[in-house]
Length: 91
Picture (cartoon, rainbow, N blue to C red):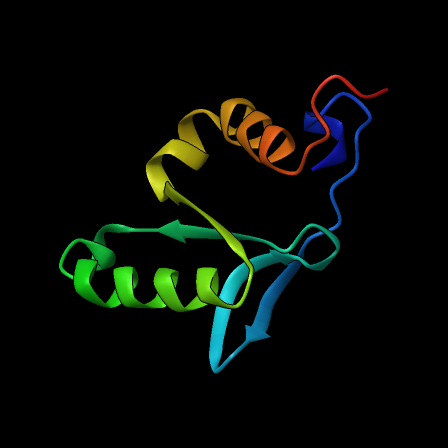
């Protein structure tokens, strides 16, 4: 991901356990969760909302992206992550 963020690194770990959930990616130093939702998640809104709420209750920020957005516009997705991690404008 650092190649997509102009030299700014965000350390994220895949399949990271947090309070009984396994999240897609977690950046523990920033308490940031990145979830990538595919078409199988279209009917899972209530479950996703409960999961997001629980993660936020324990201090995590949750970003959700559709799989298609990640595939089609990875640069924009990475930019959102960098901004949320507080690394925008750093060198």
